Image (cartoon, rainbow, N blue to C red; front, side, top):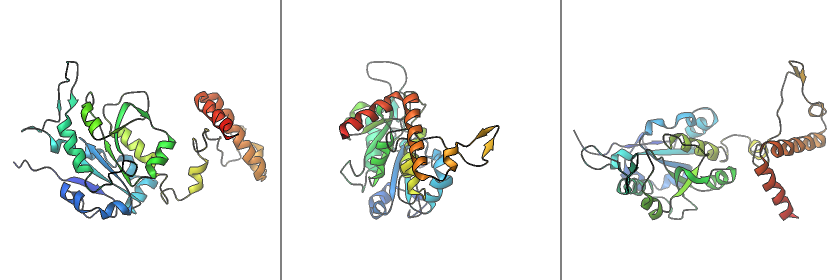
Length: 273
């Protein structure tokens, strides 16, 4: 049996092949300028694209508006069994991803990408990371692409995070068995902000968090359901009153459900004055 690394996978209309070897990553820098791209380091490449391959994000993937490459972490493992982890220094439960293994995978993933981290961040999905929010999604959408490390076990050796200036990102105060689901959440929230992905730019400007507030209630036909009618203002045809009502509802919901966001919103308004 050969010990040669299993080719990683590349997806998106502008990909040159269904299989992507590390050499191809280095030889195809032109692909980076074509569309936003995610390079995902994972032990489970078959998890992608997952939900990202469906609906509007899936269509945008097929149209080449964004793309992704999976880099199999196991290919960089040590020894006959390609071990990727080892016991924690100082003792403790679980296993830790080795820095030499992760480092080699990052080197491969970064081939041909900009050295400027603002143009191509390296992210590690971690519960101790900076909370992921809409502002971060906009920042990532403005980059050329991202490299995402999907962790497993007890985490990754701190030295590799420091050496490569890896940005730790959390999608919430809970623990998952791995970073793949978190990576898909981050990618979905980011690529939907790319031009042409949703098809209606106004929708991203009006939804929750876009102006620091939660979104107002939404209604559609029938005009009455289960004895509940659509608020009269929404059927009045008076755009000024509708806009005012929606703003009031956004403020009321944010104040009740997310006092942290409401305080930040009020603080921002005071600064603006």
